[in-house]
Image 1 (cartoon, rainbow, N blue to C red):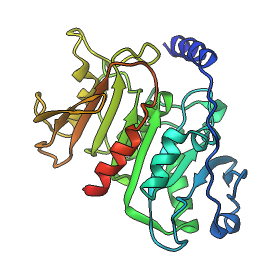
Image 2 (tube, one colour; image 1 turned 45 degrees about the vertical axis):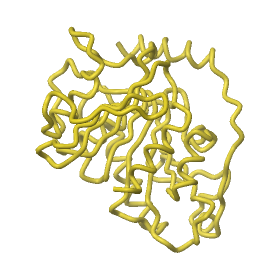
Image 3 (tube, helix red, strand yellow; image 1 turned 90 degrees about the vertical axis):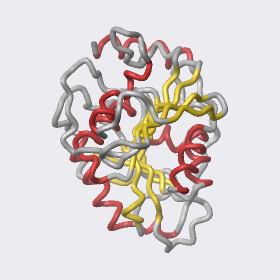
Image 4 (cartoon, one colour; image 1 turned 45 degrees about the horizontal axis):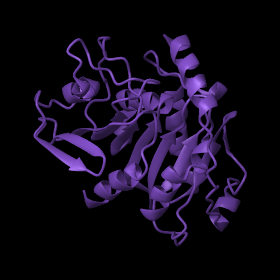
Length: 271
């Protein structure tokens, strides 16, 4: 199965070119921490990237978005993607982009080697930047989204919420999230043929969020459905766990939809 996704993903990447202009914010604190423009943050033989919001005063506590890159990419690609950086900059988030070993992630089975790496990053961040510990969010695209799902399952208590984009865990398996409930919003294209949305035997796209609907103790049918630009969003807001679960669908393929993170982060700021 992994080979299948690798080949599909490679084909997708060969057909897709990114001409995004890098967006950087360099502060004295970044230089002091050894993570300034063009330099990775080193941690126990591995690395991660950071970008502070341009409006940051250098001392106020920062909300955090930890975003996992797609297969074949690095954290530097995340920092060069305006569909991510423009949203985090606008809403004042510290963007954190871990670098995967071999430009990929270990999410297929339990006890991922990348879970302790992400936990170590969080601890390291708190020694370098003033972090708002109540506003640490998790995200990812494609393989990175599946990694974000895995991390939320294994260490969800460390995060205020999950914003997943175009990648899930295989839900045909008997997967349980030991870390318990977490607020989640997942977005996926109905025409995605790189990491297709799990639909089950009934071909129901809402099956794609079933793991979190079950973990968050939500009823089968969503409480509300709303249209937001190109997205049709199904919301479970009355879950017994007190956590909210949403899946937003669009009629396109495998991508980070333009404007999506802006919408998601704006909603977070209102909560």
